[in-house]
Length: 430
Image 1 (cartoon, rainbow, N blue to C red):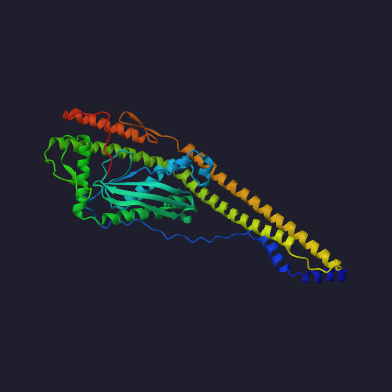
Image 2: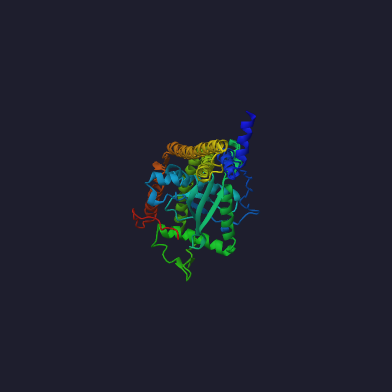
């Protein structure tokens, strides 16, 4: 018995292709069984805090429009293509407000600005208006395209991309997730860039920005009465040509109405905050699970590729590598046949394992899709009562605000006798 075994071993030693084939077999069978990704914690970035009180006349208000959901029109109705790009419309629509609120909180917490509000379309009063489009938003990555312009039309930030990976430390516990947003670094970077842009303008520039925004509101409400106070310069910036008298009764009424308008915007902003608070836990849970599913999907796809390629290589090697045994060396031929059969079986198993792992990746992606659907149900339209009117804050906030502005125009007309156009809308910010 030992002599026969020795003959087989001696035959196998003569196979020049054995080391390469054996390596392929081992790799196909074992590689991908354990993948370790070492992830280092992200360095934390915070918004620069104000070190001293900013004079009221230079304290600029910031309006943040609800973000553009960033759903490409060409694939908006193609669920399969949306899934491939990890775009889930229900979540994106909710994120339009949720992410705006997160950025608002960051700016507000810095103490560098006046009132910071999430505002609907049609608001033209803020000293600085910030807009953003969601380019990518998953539990693993966030990318935004951000712009900011002041009341004079001066561009502070133009279509600048802000992107970052999730801080995995925020996903460890519920307390950690509540303490710091996984993408706080992105919001802090935007806040610091906005502050750097403000630093380019002098105190006199900032005071003029405030005056222009006040006169734009007045001109929007009563264009004939306040015509001629503002004009554009050679650079296209809105400048104050002259100021109304401090004791002008029309101006006093405008100031009063603007305060009421600000109260309405504050109420809408407050409901945006409530919306964010209500969805904080489910959204945080979706982000965490989304990140885990994406990681699992990418890992299984990588393992699938490795197993499939190595398995196919093992099969091909067993077929095309030439025989190493002599015509009458039956022991060698039997050993060679056994090794070829083993290679084909092992390689085929590796290929099938790779295909199975592609299937696992699809299951992981489906988990994210199902979570998106359940989250969409939780992010249903909210209705609120505001001075006897029912406002729908999801999808119709802009219409409700336009209706409110028409009401303000009517109030002003009743108080001053100025003609009112009920269908008038606000002048868009530059």
